[in-house]
Amino acid sequence: MEAFPFASLLAGAFLTLLCFVLFLNIFGLPANWIILGLVALWKLLLPGQGQLDAWFWAGMVAFALLGEALELGVQVIKARHYGSSSSGTFAGMVGAFIGAILLAPLFWGLGALLGALLGAWLGCYIMEVAKGRPTAEAMNAAMGAMMGRFLGTVCKCGTGAAMIALTAHHIWPAVAEPETPAEVVGVFLHALVAFC
Image (spheres, rainbow, N blue to C red):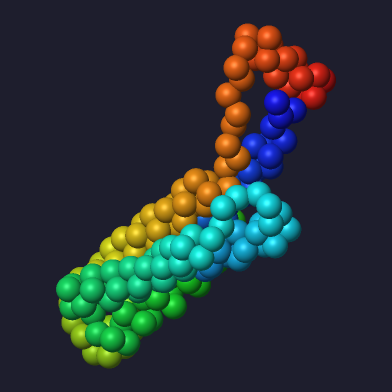
């Protein structure tokens, strides 16, 4: 019978770290790629822990690429749907990145999401007005850029969460079931002693 499951604690701590990294998507940073890099580092440092085969890596890269495609695609589609020009859409993306960085210190980091949304709106609006579009059209286009940014971020966070779930499924150690009541008590007492 295995002693206190240190491998489970290690896997749990690593998965918690990945969950925190996932929130970097709000800042417009490549969180899904950082997750992929951290999982590769896990495999490098702990090669015996987890079944990280070629299909696992193919799935991880596919999810990361899908996240990027959805983030960009949803932003462009929403902005276009609301009448934004290509330059307005691009300005909205740049504005979202700058706004996320500038407002990140507010509300314990949650200001980054607000900053990204406001930055997308302002960037697109300023570009559309600079191109000579009427205010009402520019505001409508900016609304599309803001909505696209929000939905794109949601999609990218969703694919990142799928990457974490896939990782959890592959690295979480199998727990051997105790066979007798004495073994159950032994595992409990061993865990109790390890924490004291």
